[in-house]
Image (cartoon, rainbow, N blue to C red; front, side, top):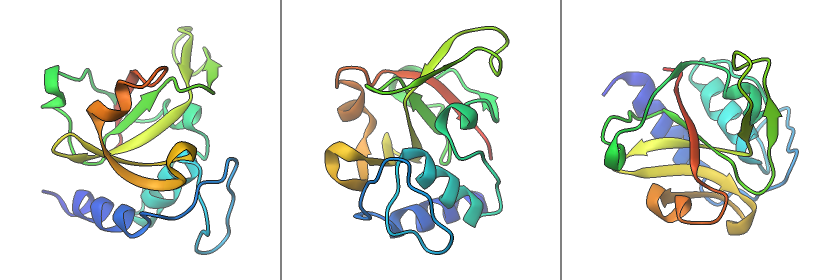
Length: 145
């Protein structure tokens, strides 16, 4: 495993339990996250600058087509889902309309970490448990590391 992938796991897991707040902004150590501010903060800590919003984060990196059981995903890959709130963007995706409402970090072994209102904040979760929920199908996977 490469150093940045190890750091992603270490940093992200330190924030398990940090409360959720939609539109979270922070200047120092955050007291709360929404899904995209969590991604932005964790990646910034390892020296990777990503935009603040999930739809703009989805425009970064290399697209990965997930294989069955997600066996080709790597630690640090970003999984984008529709969710029940999301945004269309066709300019960043070569004229294709894509609906993004949620983002999570892949941790390996089919586990993700993300901040979600339903669970009160940052949690680690199995991909299968998330995608069986209505509106949480994966619409895009991006590799930024």
